[in-house]
Image (cartoon, rainbow, N blue to C red; front, side, top):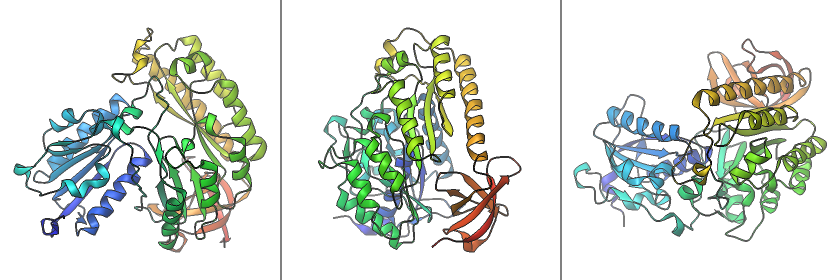
Length: 443
């Protein structure tokens, strides 16, 4: 039994680094603490409890985590600091040595945080580090973020069985596992009852859904498509080899799944893809992009790419650049390769200098800007349904079309969390979004 008296009049702050999956999990942790009477600290208020959910996808991510922990300790010097997430699982002792950290929780323990808060006495912590070997982690912890009343992030899957040569995520997250379709449908229904209009399906490798329940991802999205009250679903990053023609065809005729795909390419060189131990080649990737365009001509296609991996010579990067330039996509997410201890990529001899990585990143980011500008431009003059968000910047508010075009309009509180039919006009002053003329609320 948990002694709730230790939580009386306590306040907490939450800090999340990394992916949308982390944000969903932090939101769940916050809800668990709130149910015990721990309220979120107000701006400028010193908190009693600080929870830091970390990322370790790159060396820079590790550095940002350490900086965040030190900054939080400085802002809340008397708070009980709990660190969890991927960095905490991979390097728990390193995290425990950071000044101010009281408790380190691994992947298995983060969802059971209350059972590890026996008391909040910084001088009497029963254990500084509570983790389990990642090979033993088999449980799936449901999570759904609810910080934004417009968009929710629903965790449908966790872990990864792929073991790409450059990646540490399987060592931080464990084996692929997932929630049941029945439970996830109930979670989506709860989001709808609370007024949420859009759900993003998140996970580490969501196309691999079904490993622990013997179900299939296509059956999950079919079931979610029937949940009344949700206006939109978006599928977050999905491996190209797991994006089936059946799934693309379903999205094309779906009532609620948006024409928005995010595909990790990582490299446009077949040689580099082989070194990375990816499960596809450029021919398959091109086929998937062309298949989407054939079935859903106006779909937004975002693509991840990593530059500067070991072995990526100038010639191999040129292959990547030419391949991406030839694809009809809408945007690139560009990442610089970061060496991670214990990965097989360290066995590859050729190391790309930092300045070369930076130059290659700039090239791809410029290409991305050209492609996104062209994608937006071909929609000017068309009507579209936009879900406007609560966030505002000065007197402007923003929303997204079904195919993920950002739209700007004068702020009107009544438009927030509403789907409104608009006529897409020209560019806003800094060309980061399209302006619009509102037509009517979409029913």
